[in-house]
Amino acid sequence: MKMLSFAAVFGASVCAGVSCAAAEAGACAPVGDDVPLLSEVSPEARPYVELLLKCAAVVERINVLQDSIRDRVSADAAAPRLGSLYRELQDLMGKARTMPEPDAEVKQQVEQVLHQVLEQPMARLIQGVMYLALNQCFESDALRELLDRLDQAGLSPS
Image (tube, rainbow, N blue to C red):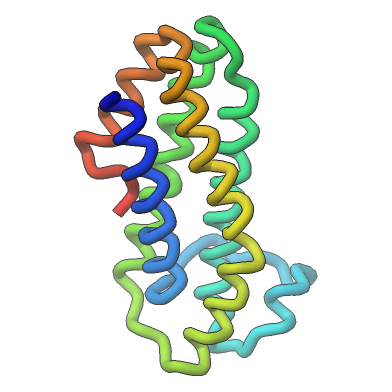
């Protein structure tokens, strides 16, 4: 039951953390001008959108990896990489928290992009974590320990 509780809390706090990132974001590796979303926002909103795109890419990599878990062997193999990806997402959200609050116009632009790029991937991430929890992490001690560490460390990410 602890795993199901973790899955619910994790999913909610990731969404809250990424929403926080959308509202406060900034520093990340530049994303090329060829990304349509960047050309659709003001220059002031670009750093925030770049971070959202970076978060979305990490979330997608987590989703692909979680989707590959079907048994204990694949769960054991995926656990270290999942840990790295969750830490990467946590780092991005940490960067977001250091940025100043955007003005209302920029915040509105960022929220629109947030819904475009993260709504479905985040829902999929939450479903993936719940799937793992419902399947008892496929009896993988490595995966179970990872989820427990994420929970204990508050990397649910907040």
